[in-house]
Length: 182
Image (cartoon, rainbow, N blue to C red; front, side, top):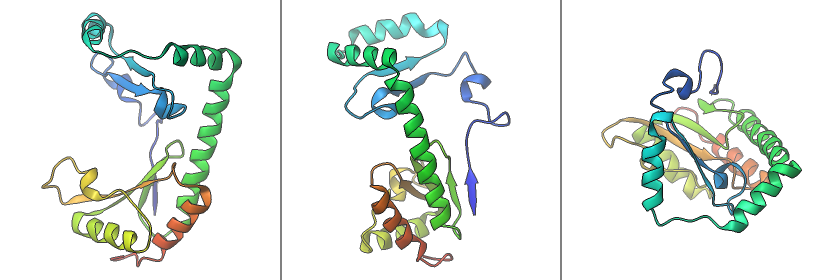
C-alpha cells in the first residue's frame, strides 16, 4: 500500500499557510551536489535585519570558488539540467520502491530520495535489526523519533546513496520479510 506526499492544492507549502512565520533553510549540497557548500535562507521580511546581524557574527565564509562555480552553472544551464536529472532519478527510485514493496505501507514522494515505512516502534526496531542481519542498512527508528515515548515510528529508507542495482537488491531483500511482522 503506497501513500504519496507532495505539494498539491490540498497540501500547499508551509510558507503559503504562514508566510510571516516560516523560515526556509536549505543548502546547495542537498539540492545540487554534496561538495557545493553554500547555504540558502529565505525568511519573512520582518526577520531579515536580525538574521543579517546573526549571520555576520558567525565565523562562516563560503569559498569564492563556490560562488564562481555556481554563477557559471546558473548562466550555462547546468543548474536547470541537474534539477531535471535529479527529479527524474528520484521518481525512478520512488517507482522502484513501489514496484518492489507492493505489500507494505510506504510513504514516498516522487521528488524525494527517501521513503517512510510507518510501523510501531518495537516492530521497527526488529525490522531494522533483521534488515542489518540480511546486509541491508536502513535508518533505525530512534534516529528519526522526536519523542522517545512515541510508540508509533517507522523505518526511513534512504534511496539516493546506493547504486540502482544495490537499491534493487536491498529492496528485494526487504520485500521478502513477511508483511505482518517481518
